Length: 485
Image (cartoon, rainbow, N blue to C red):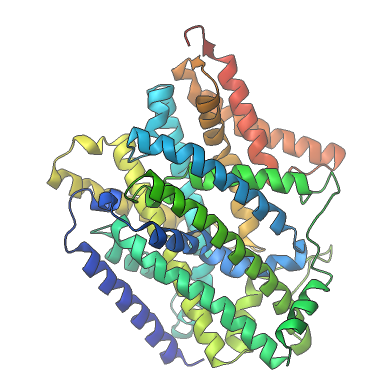
């Protein structure tokens, strides 16, 4: 694909985003950056949230991971759907009743100030790593497709992306992102559909034949019942429930968009619609993964393997085929999809990080208009630097990024999940000052248990580590409970 064509696509895409930013920021108030003035249409939020949830991870990593993990990820998706029901009917009514801007304010009401700060801090760590790893994948692809041709070093590519994100989110924040996410979702799904069409057309397969080739392929193994396997159905399903609750319902990034809806009922319709669209879209990307491997075999493309025969660099399969083998239209659609992934993976995350830190640690609600603006700008810049540092630290990683993200989430979101579950489903009070110690000890015990069981019994926690982590947290809270309930 022509370098100048790629440059033109990037400029045109960014121009559209800047136009949206201008239109949405014309009547912005002091709260627009954080709450979107609570006037967002629920159906728009639902569709846009799909793009933020997918990002470059689902777009590239899920199709690639099929080669090593078959269709087992679908077990996790089924658990996600159940988790979203909990968010819809338990968490959203709670957040609207308390009229929260930062959702971690609940922990202050329930347990105390130390717990509140601890919960918010765990979100800041979790979201910083999650957003950075998602952007890392997209940045690597843009580096390969465009910036390498001009000799631009990778660190400068990341700086350019972060600067562009800052330009269109700086003024109106979440109010702008609700609209830009909708466009980003559209391009992500369009790229998948165009790629499927290109593969089936080039291999002269009808729709029925394509479905048959996918469902009869060795990688189309959906359920795993081996107890010791990290892909065991019950581990994946339960982990899917808990990670959905933690990474969406207890995540300021995702819930901040939901809380921009006009009322609780609209927010609940948003979450239910989002969960169904997301599940169908993820299934589509898994099916695309098998088609990519079928096509790769037909044109002689081979991924490197490790000493155990597992594929390495699975995240490069989709970019390589789309940009070098499937024609111009597929290349353009893929490029638009990965550009959308680049921005959607980090814009809302930086807004949520800014909101959480400003309200939870800098007492933003008590500041005047000019003070709020200065604080917001400084915090937004600070987290941009944090994301840059994390990306550079992991820039040499190999394998599928999505597994790395969920592995990290098991350790960082586990204490947060334990705090909320104990807060909502028990009436105990705790010694608030000891909560930070409990939340530090829980991930340490989880990691130690994981290593011991893996080495001694070849038992892999898989994604279920989040449940173990939350369990240790809840046990610790029970130990430090007080007599006063």
